[in-house]
Image (cartoon, rainbow, N blue to C red; front, side, top):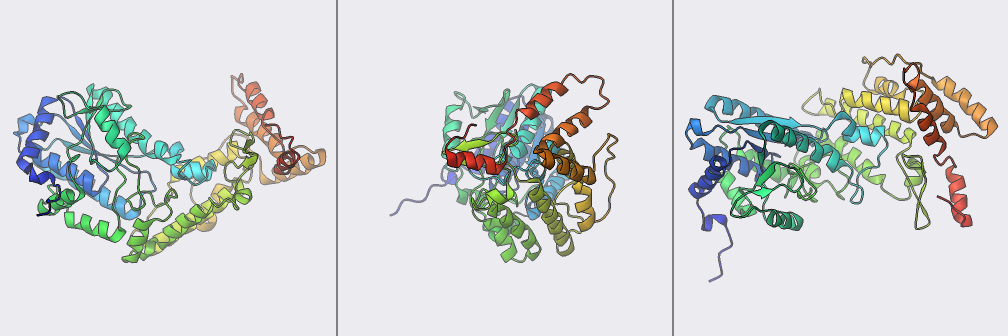
Length: 468
């Protein structure tokens, strides 16, 4: 007879798994932080912990358990709605049943969000060799929460819904940092944090069998989760990312609707194919971002200098820097237009694909770092969405007309207009400050940037006399 496929339930029953969770909880006087992504694995881990602790007397449930989800602000809207609704139910049910669960939704700082970096600073759409988004948008927000709780309580135990075989790197790290004679591992980077993985030996089939055989203790519907996976064709999920070894999102996953690291967004395509037609503008915007990675388009939409003002040559080829300001304006226009379409056709007329704080931050970056004397953000917003109040800048500001006059003078003298504009912006920003010690060093930095035009740089490459 053929050997039966492996299942954790061939050797352990739920009572045994519950007892293990109870022993870890009672044997380690530390609060727990459960990473909850809304997917099948993290739901299984959370549900197991809930049922196991529910069997304990109330007086023994004394260590708080924080259920933490990550919202990058560009999560697929359907998933965001599912997660936030679940967190609300968990919080309400925990209060009713005197369970020690508290929920938290962590977000990146405004200066670290996707749109502030992409549209504000001009970072190119992420790809496999430049995945600038993960650390800023996922790792840092989660780690700030964990470190805050570790500081408050001394130490914490992180409960992650990771399973063996999902990531070879993760498997290796788990085995290397496993504490002797303990079910806990030391966290790879966070001090005073330990890791517990209650579903590490579950197979995917075990996970689904458990969820469909055991109802959600906070009043959710696990069959809705099955439907969500079926509609998105998702085989994986984006877990709470706390370090570089956490399994990344695969080709079919729950995650950011803007993700350009994958070739195709099968999850969003699956949702659209299953009736969520209002998400089509999101998919089109995502595909537009992916197209910007085409090498032939880079000279048209990206600066020839890096953000530090220097030119980079690799293998005798020019390495392009951030998106040009003009292309960033186009991106903002497209994003706001997409937002209007989603508001009109989607389930929520108040949908915000970009927050007010992000718009203000982009506006500040454009004006202080990218010489946007036109002050384009309010104008673009007014044309597409309508009027709104903006933060008043009470410092002396230049106008688009000033920029035109400056350009005429600089062109006549053969001086880069951006150089002079940067110098003027630096003086404007420090005008009226009691301490101006840093202005000279900032001026020196500006003068030491590479102010050659792209044509001059390419001519140097052709002549073989490029100097970086």
